[in-house]
Every structure is written in structure tokens, then in C-alpha cells.
Image 1 (spheres, rainbow, N blue to C red):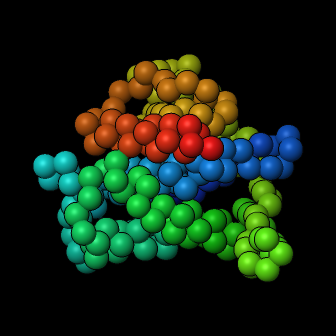
Image 2 (cartoon, rainbow, N blue to C red):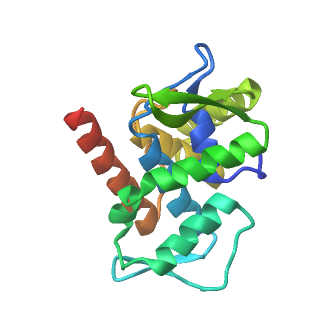
Image 3 (cartoon, helix red, strand yellow):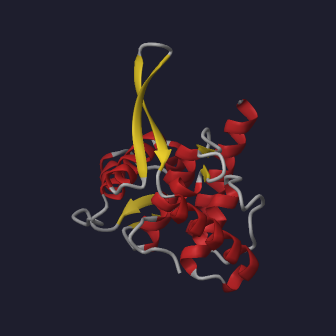
Length: 199
């Protein structure tokens, strides 16, 4: 079973690090992967629902206790209606930034400043908790082996990681999913294909 203290998008963010090199992989796809994780988690918690294909907040006063998820939930509430696939990409870097900041606050990532193009300040992160990332990789492998019998948390992690092409999942597993999860994965797959194809 996965560590319940971390949200699905936070787990996906940690999973994006190569523990051997200490470098993140699939950096170009990471904003979409993390956003797909946020959509999945909020839908599973019953805070987002599908209304004729549109992502719809269920309770305008709801909070999760996770800053990144709460910020995204507020963004959905205040924005024009969008489909699940549209939300995978719309302002996705905002959710990634919030998730990374939360992981840094928890001591799982270490922020470091640098200047892009010599003058634009940016934040780079270093993985601190290699053990947790290794455990997440093991959870993905378990889910791939278990298939439809995988626990829901591990199945969601593996399905999204595989869709984005993260190791150790290099192909999307045949895991049971509901229509919303399928739409999120299809939106993620399209975003990844566009990003990789356009790179």
C-alpha cells in the first residue's frame, strides 16, 4: 500500500526522478502528468464530477488540506468550463509548481535557484528522499504485475505513469478504469504525444 500522506500528483512527481542519476525524467511531460494526477485524485475524492463531459466542482466550499489540490480546485471553480482532456494541459505548470513546493516543504525535494538564459530566475529541485521514490517504483511494478487486481492507489499511479512513459512502466497497463479515469488518461496521452511529437 502506498504512503497515504502524499497526494497522487505528489507521488507522480516523485516517481519522475531517476534514482540512479538523481535527475528527473520526462521533464517535458511532467506538468501534464501531475495535472492528470490532480484531476484523478479530486474525481476519486468526489470533489470533481463529470457533467456532460465537463469537469464540474461538486462542492464550492470543499477543501482537501493539500495546498496544490486546493489551488487547482479553486482554479477549476473560477475558470470557464473545460473537458477533462482540456484540464490536463490548461495552466498545468501551475499545479506542478505547487506540488514541487509542497514536496520541498515536506523535505522530499530540495529547491535550488539558477538563472535561465543567464537572467531569468528559476527553481531547480533535487531529490532528497530516494527511498520513497524507489518504493513508488516498486508500487508501479506491483500494479503492472497484478493488473486488474491491483489496489486502486497503485493502479492509478501505474496507469498515469505508463501513459506518460515513465519508467518502470513503459507501456500503459490494462487496469480497470472508470469513464472519467479513461478520459483523463486519453487527455494525458494526447498531451504527451503532442509534446513529444513537437519536440
